[in-house]
Image 1: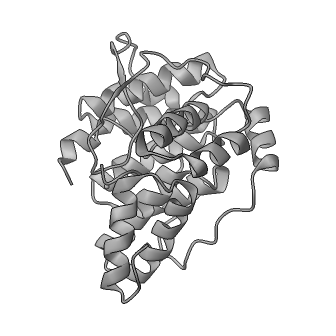
Image 2: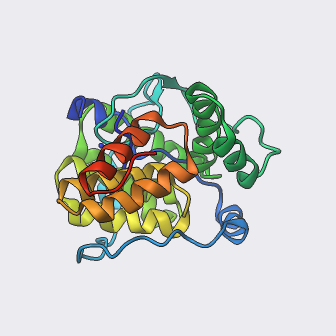
Length: 253
């Protein structure tokens, strides 16, 4: 998995997003209060502002039922490894704060242990606190899984009209723009994701991958370093970080 908002197969990427999950508006506000200052992202290329989401009344088709399962949220360029819960539900260890979970993630002794914690963090990011938003997100994920990017964009636009502070919707939309090779819009949506969830390691990994593909390797290395600091047991990103360190004249871990 080359994680996020990236080369096994592009079709496999469409099954998931950049990695993530949020809470209701008050909960998100509280999480932002409890969250450290956003990471200092290197100067990025000029990108257009994210387009205004379209009115859901004209874009969302009638519901045709829920997909039988959801894939684990993930970054473009990396196939999903495990199936997730068939519905958005309350994450385990809900009594732990995100700070506690990120401390566990940083201290995870093995990749498997780190993945278990990462999945709990992603569950927090995905749960919106609204049944309507959750239903729309389930349908958006199903559309991405079916490689129906147009429908997925319609649904995500509708979600962002209803809940513009839902970081995971920005992250998923960034993923679709990435798949369409529209890096400008993808980066703009990643920036919105990071404004709401500064420690979104999936969005950061996707940003690093795009910067690398745009031959902005020094900037990509800085962002990869942020991911490694947050999630040191994520082997795919750690490998990319080490390789890029050598390429730009740095040194491996």
